[in-house]
Image (tube, rainbow, N blue to C red; front, side, top):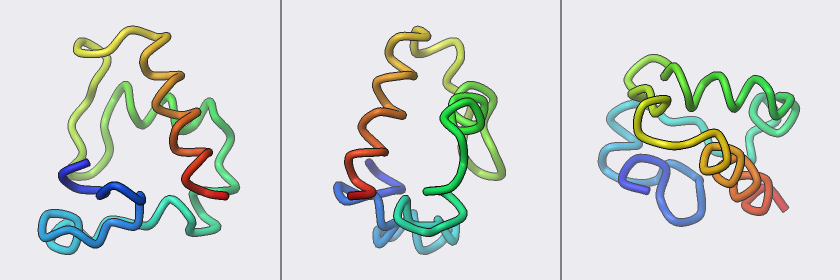
Length: 71
């Protein structure tokens, strides 16, 4: 939440600095869940990897939550 913010828009100081793309951006909305899972597990750009910090079920829950923010 520090980077993406509570609504997933990336309008936080850290999000703006890292040029976070909103979860509502078509480039994220159109990504398959498998791609989001890979990004969460391995990290991307300035986003750290979470494979050792979250279980597969927790990562899926994050993806499910991201999808709710896109509505």
